[in-house]
Image (cartoon, rainbow, N blue to C red):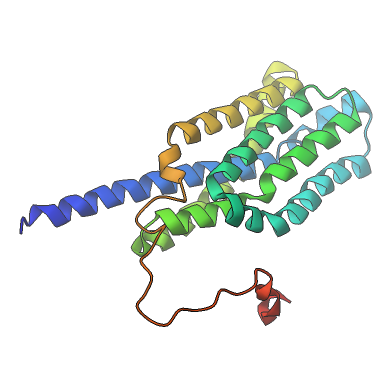
Amino acid sequence: MDPIAPRAGAAVALRQDARTIGLIGMAHATSHFFHMLLPPLFPWLISDFSLNYSELGLLVSIFFVISALGQASAGFLVDKVGARPVLFFAVGCFAAAALAAALAPGYFGLAVAAALAGLGNASFHPVDFTIMNKRVSPARLGHAFSVHGITGNLGWAAAPVFMAGIATATGSWRTACFAACGVALLVLAVLWWNRDAVDDSQGEWAHAAPSAGPQVQPEHPMAFLRLPSVW
């Protein structure tokens, strides 16, 4: 047996894992970036639309309520159609949200932008965890989850600087929203170009061979509701 072969195989596996982890980390950072699409622009929105803080707070609530309601069903959708198409849809929602904000003629347009961003955010944890569990080798899953968490926080940190910085430099909050749309489209293009690395139907861990033990009867999809930890 060639002693170099195992090392070469390990190097290939490491590159594949790193590629998937990096792509999912980038996508997760984008998700958290769009949590902060509108809040850094509140001073400009108050000036342009004469909004009060209750109206601005409602925009944030719209985002998170839709995220919560959507996340309750996103896992079932991922199980049904796969994680990768849902990932592409989610990032597309972010681009649409930023465009809607940039073109918003008033409060309703901003609410539509918040709703679209919330819809995109809703599916991210089911999507990310599914792809990482199926594409990343078990020995590196802990690292994958760590990077996933770190990149989310980096997305939060980047958004206020990006949005408020562009709005201040250009004098236009709409320009900042157009730029955010460009960020989402760029991320979507990178994910599409590397779509093989986020394909949850392929990969060494996607279709593990069944064990030789007794066959277990599949549980009902809602069986998790019997778990005490859910409540």
